Length: 428
Image (cartoon, rainbow, N blue to C red; front, side, top):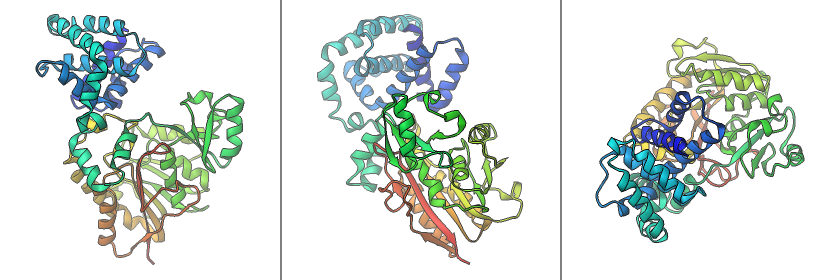
């Protein structure tokens, strides 16, 4: 436990210092190649859990500490231990003992007594401390105050539901490759393996419990992919047809590209500015036994990569805050800043305006984000329509998408993450 506690602290420390969680964990795995799968799972659980419940944990720590802690390392150690004591089944005394040992390695060990006292006091007053802490909204909903204010203004009836959904463990959802099977038949395969699941749509299944992909029947044969149900809406909304030229403008890691190729025999160009992440697109398409023209380039600068032939369909999965997938990336709640949204809106405007001339007459562009903030969703889409009189907003209707896709916005719930979609056709 000592090693996992140490590595979890290092990971959370990196995040609270400004690094995103995915990068922080990658660094941890790279620097500790010999840890066991069990240790790796424990580190990941502690890191994700601490960040998911950070508002509550910080409020509890403030009640227990007589004055603010100056040493971030010590503060992180206490936060991760409070998470374990409150939310896991690990032995309380072992957690405290290991925490004291870790504290001995921080700042010449001066914080050992403080760590021991804080954690033991928490165990003695656990229920009372949690109840007191949750009187504060930041602790109750585990989001920054500015984020809660924005949600209250944008969604006065649903803001609590959105915040609570962000704090849950995300569901594991499967997309069934229509070239091989459908949800009804694939459920039978899962039942044979003893894997409980339920159908969401004709080609969508949600697992009761997350599973390793090698436990999924025919996964490596391309029959099924892991993809959130809300994300699956993108390819369906494009309504691609055989023979069309299609551009996935921000393709990595390749989930939407693969889905498009499952739905029709199209000429797909998969583009992404991150050359490293395009390897995942290649791997995903290879598993699905599909092909695409894969290019590492910035969609905002077509002169660098475009061959001059217009596209019948463009999927513009534009840069955004990713606030709709905060339950999968809990660090987002604490790393985002209010001023970030103006920059995302600027990037979106630049990309959309660069891509629109590439749409053929009568063709369609699907604007997509994984956000719940209006500034980078319907306000951005509305501004695009005002800049381009030849862009006609189309209704979003398809039998295979979630029924709660209201005016383009999907809010996170038990079935899917948060997404926004706006479909534009080019008037001839």
